[in-house]
Image 1 (cartoon, one colour):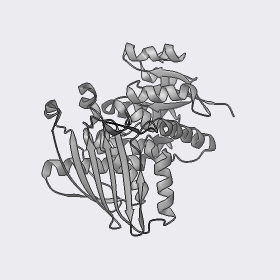
Image 2 (cartoon, helix red, strand yellow):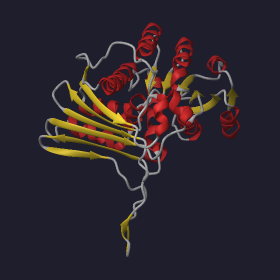
Image 3 (cartoon, helix red, strand yellow):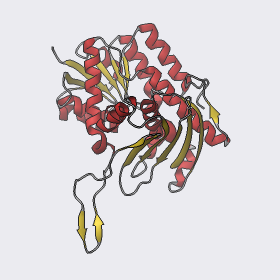
Image 4 (spheres, one colour):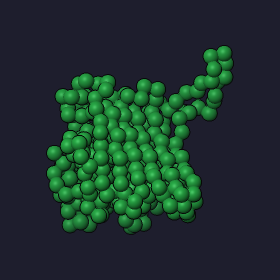
Length: 341
């Protein structure tokens, strides 16, 4: 079959990752165009040998573009998705779908009305470790799930212009943890309680954000959950998870980038995973290959709008809990109604 010709909107840190993968390593796809308003970022078009657009709507309208990756800033994503959905072309969108639940509801309604194909970028589901753990749980290898723990610790704070449009630590960083715990347990979150604070980056007070937070979760079938989000793991990028059951436990992730342990007079030492690209570069490729495969087969997206809605609902509940100091319940289906602000 001919390769699907893809255009990428937004060439920030994730858009550039997707563009590079599509330019050379995603089976069944070919990058043909990119769009970004920043001339420095748009220089990537020349590097990759594809057409560059300043106006994303022009790229969407191009007959050469058959599928669209939306990776623009979170606070601009709804407008990008609106145009992409209207085009009728298959869409892959970075997480989260939008900054607010109300915006997600509008996007969801547009997807349903148009019958659009929209896959969300929760790449951990495609990481071999998480995927294998899900299979083990489904096989009953650890009995009944008692508790789940997931952490995302970034080595440093992203730029403040990114923070300003990110949606906050829960919607931007911990949303991956919320989604992967839904994926691993096959269950919905019933309530959230969050605490957090600014421990290192005082300027975050200006954005109403924090650099460290903990969330306790109660799942509908009774399992307990804990999520730790941090932006100051100075030693490296630390992403791990554990699922504890009545008959055993599964630990997911690793901390040693190079399979080498140095033993000398100073003791034992090894390197650490540098950042998100090194840890999940294979998963980023696999999620795009799953996108292409589903489009070709006419199958539903493996990670859909409902998954995006429920992950953001948990993030919004966590923010409300942080601000109120009280647990926040979700509906039985893992849904939280209302505006995110």
